[in-house]
Amino acid sequence: MNPVYALQKINTWWKTGEVDATLLHKRIRSEFMDVLKSIGDKRITNIVGPYGVGKTSLLYCTINHLLKSNIPPERIVYFSGDEMILFGEHRSIGSLLEIYATEILHENLFAFREPVYIFIDDIEFIEDWQIYLLNYLDKTVNIKFFIAQTYTPFSELDEKNEYKIIVMPLNLPQYSEFYFAYKLHDLDLVRYKSLMPEPSVFADPVAFFEELYANIYALRDFKPYKSQIVSDYLLSGGYPAYFSSNDITRWQAQLLNITDCSLYRDIGAFNNIKSPQKLKKLLYIIAEQGRTEQSFGKIGRSLYVDTSTIIGYISNLSEGGFAGVQDNFSPESGVEGRIVRKNKRFYIYDTGIANAIRCNTSIAENFNDHVTNAFLYMAKRYAMGVDGNVYFWKNGIREVDIVLYEKGKILPVSVCCQKENLERTIKSTRAFMRNYGVKTAIIITRDLIKSDRGIIFLPYWMF
Image (cartoon, rainbow, N blue to C red; front, side, top):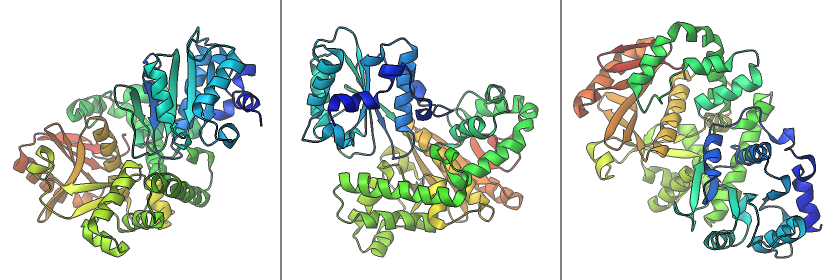
């Protein structure tokens, strides 16, 4: 197919003036605000995340925004790096952009009269793409690049030339907004959001509690709906495509396909891993064993690989958006990165993928564990944005599920949705607070909300 015709077929807004509604979600991810902030930034806007989390949708939402801002449609071009029609016959990204400039805009690529907005999806499949884009930046061409890619281990981009936006599976608050848009049309999302605290619970737990408590009676009107939303999230996970599915069994099969695609096509291929099936087996081991403590060496032996190899695999899964590691917290953890205890806790970021691997179609049996994983993922997402990290703490019979460390600030978080275990959880939390001089801690409960001598108790459904 002629590349000009192919571009015309892909970029339907050149004729219609608008993005096809089927390419837009009913609810826009919160990261869209970061993309909008980057429009006036000369650097390359780079949206990075696992396969299936909504990167393409963010690109289309941005195109839609530009069109509504009266940018001429033909000055907005989108294409994907996996389009063989465009990149067959060894065509480079440079030659394709030359064709676009001369055949569509009838202008010189290096002397555009007005800004041009170029959106490139799955850019990691285009050979030498970094060389071309950095060359355009160096020559200060009148182009704003928006690119999307899955995990790639090596990049020549840095903060001088890249506006990086990381997109992961939806966390619980994000999922709630999608759920309101897709399944609870009659509920007032605007009112609900107005009742929720502005600060993150991890950034300022005290302010979060005070705002939440002030609206407690109004928020209880939403409890039946939020309880259902959280239960659905714990089972199905945070991939937006779930909202187009009506059957949990089919959805779990789709999640496993998404996982395979990412492990083999993206993480395995781009890291030149000779046995990507071991990555898959490792992910399955982590899902099946839950957050039990074990060493790298023990997991490595189960896969017949050495410790350094398994550490590399875990790093691949972490950077690829699938799994994380919690070390046992100690003073050295946050100061110098040294970890005293050898055993770790490994966990799957997305609860839906973990359930799909385990063939779980119900969360009733291990509800507390599911809630713990969801809040651990929320804490991890927060830590990623503030250059922090998440740990656990265990000392004899005392333990804390999550220890969030952020630039010297320590916040212990435990989950206890079972009343019979609450006193033990409180004792463990207070032991940690005494040991490390911490003044504020959080315990996630089933329905208890109060503040008692530095411990903030918050119901799981109020997020």
